[in-house]
Picture 1 (cartoon, protein in one colour):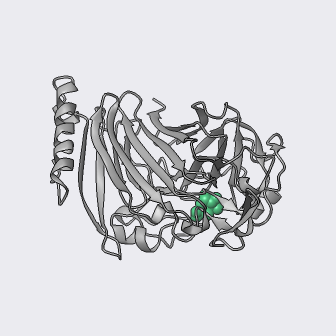
Picture 2: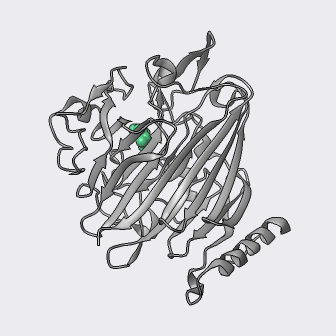
Length: 387
Ligand code: GLA
């Protein structure tokens, strides 16, 4: 069992109680697999803020580790078809990598996931200016988005459906140029029955604002190498074509007849080099898919199968869009966990969210949040095997 470092007596007591609850509910004979949640120190930010890492285990032995810095999912360990456990997300062994050189590995993204054209939007007749940190656009909440904030632990305990960690962050009015004080919670639950990690967001504001939260885990079901042989199904008949800066043109186009048609499961690498303008603009896949299921209701967005390991990943969400990014900016310069080099297209990222640049696109579902309203977004990462 991990030591509980430097935390308030209350939190330590909660964690211990959680483990006890877990033991009590577990079937006899598998004590080592009792669901649990433990934590330890993971260092400190350059401002001296302490960072913790929480380890959640379910009764199948699946494990997820989450940092209070950026709400980052640092690892997810799941079995392959032979029962061999493996880590299926990219990241770092220590905080330093996350602080100095992370392309949003595993992080929570806010206030606005994806791009806002030229860092401008108008709300209630007032113009707002954001940092253009992805020239010429604003990306993933700006220079210091939610991925670079230390979140507060609200709760860490074993619930009936599995170990749960609830984090919160209050973004002050005007932070990164966005109006309104935004109060956000992100709750992670490692579901015992389904071998799934569920992430639930809730947010409220005190002024009209725009919100688009998501998770940015880089998955590789094989644990290393490229993901070009991993087979993708996406539950989308349409997508939002982009310009050369990856801002939607406003059109909602059919995937039919394009390399973005993943309604029949297809390897990521099968068409990625096709002579197609959309793929050229993005250097591969980096597109928003218009998901077929109803917005606000949990439904299947996509399924990915790795023929070699037999691992199967499903992503479910309540969001209307799914950004599918094929790790085009990875280039073997990052050495990640366990000394593994992350090659070009060494992961896929699937981000359930509203469409990019929605604040400037009147025909897209609205991302506005007003005082008195509650923003909700649920994302579920499910794991199984082919055999
Ligand atoms: C998102 C974007 C990509 C890229 C990554 C981070 O997925 O859509 O273009 O910026 O984040 O590298």
